[in-house]
Length: 258
Length: 265
Image (cartoon, rainbow over all chains, first blue to last red; front, side, top):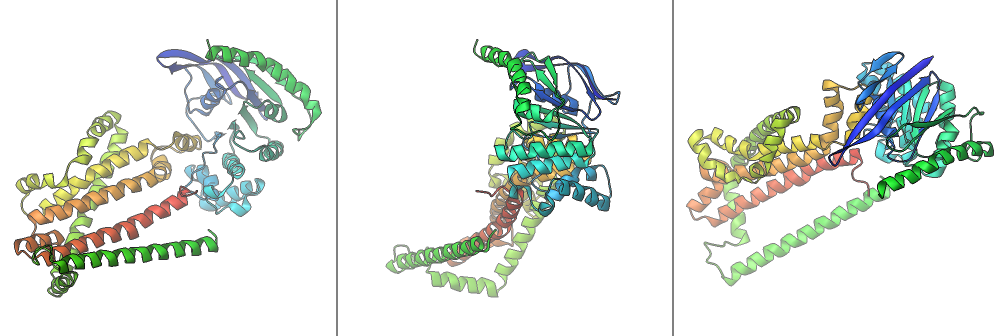
């Protein structure tokens, strides 16, 4: 079943008075339970695309359909894990996880139950009453994931959530995220500039072309899970994507140094 | 925080207190010396003991306790009104962007406007009474509250708002549960500044237009050439300002900053 459909999404940016095309007709169908990774050079508009799906930005033309219904505003059916976590420093960890549930008017007892479950899942039970400044970056991202999952969204959006982590923590979370995906059967769109991440996580990897952004290539990776960083069988996918992106990176450098 | 860190901090504040006491002792010593040397006539510069005597006098005849009470009452009343009105105007500035931009373009002039310059205006508009004094206090502190409300909210990192909207927050819920707490650390700084403006204003206004209060004690001292009383009143004003800022406003700010994780080294 098609969960999410992006139809011919176009987005311009105003850059020093000139209009720059950021997204030039993105078409993407995401099936229920898909783990879609979007990978591309920095500044290629992949985060913009995710923001449009989230409803935080509006496309200039085209539309996003969720379960066949057009969407234009942000909503808890599409929760996002931001690069910097975006946790609220004035709330305890558990209250951060419960925030969306509170906004939805769910009674306190039920909120506690749900948030406890996701804190357990992310191994954060001990930190329920901590404030966010007391957590490491990796723990913060785990809280952010728990917070997004607690909303039980139709689709989970992740915008380079592991970019700021050290590599050991990231490798650990890459495995954890796969386990969570298998357990919760969530539909996930994961944006990254890190090719290894996309190969390990995605069952579909969408390669974005440099500005004006289009989808250049889609690679399906049907391989057992949990996949590990050091798995050599994943190398061929990695090289395939590197090859696709090589020209894009060169094009981008030329773009920036005319 | 570990116990060691706490005890280190206690030791540090004990050390600071010791230094402050030493500084005061030296200050009083120099003062006494200047007095003994007779550089200024006795009537212009009394000795520390004479000032202590004045303290005794104005405490016993109740003019000091009543003065403190009246001044603080006016200050709290005026500043409370400033907070309520200033915050409301600040919110309106956020809600109506054009209005906000227009008003904030006057902010430098409004903030720098000397509080004492409101006094003649207030006397003529409202009169030589408590309401006139309140008016000066309000006008001197309201702009600082207003501008800080406006800029604190405008400077909230957009990621907090995005994240909140993403989780379904909107309208008043978004405002109450995200906008206000996210702006709080910088709001507190604005309130502290507003408080200090209000404090400047009340003393000035009382010197010129009151028949009771700390500022009034100063002006009585001047009228009767009673320098001891003037100095006693000044010391009181200094002490109250210090206590309120150090032990009330600063504590609140520290607490919030700690909770928000802004004090991490």
